[in-house]
Image (cartoon, one colour):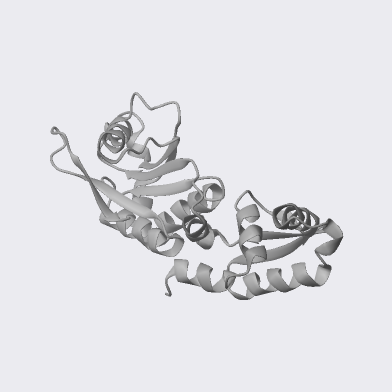
Length: 226
């Protein structure tokens, strides 16, 4: 797979209109009218000076590069950034987003409280939210869940099934990546769940870490992919 940042750079190709379009789409899907208005304001020209041909040409270039999709809803046509390129576009344009930490959980109930503390202490990251994919058997063991944490309960066998684990995690990533930067924690969970999360990290350009050390000690944040 090519370097995602290089894909973004080549797609923009030094064309300011494409940079503006991508920055607008980081806020969510936009219609042609909304993009034309944004181009007018950013370029300092009248809306009528942003022709249909110019807008179409630049949207087509971005679509051909694999950065955006276009679709129709009722009478309006929308453009959106392809989910697995959202984080690369953010990084290239230096646009930040709230951080969401996605973790797998099958044996460490206290991880729901520890992971945020270690990230704040050692990496200066204070996630705005957490999603834990946890085995059903953990329900009676997890306590003190932070208010900003969600737990997705799955059967024990699913944590050992790559396809099932991958699909559960992918659905969360695609649900959240439009509004959050997702970081992945593979401290707990099974070998299969760790592989599934790291596969998603590769596909969506996400950071991955785990807490290194004994559970009863002050563990260190170790970044696998930054």
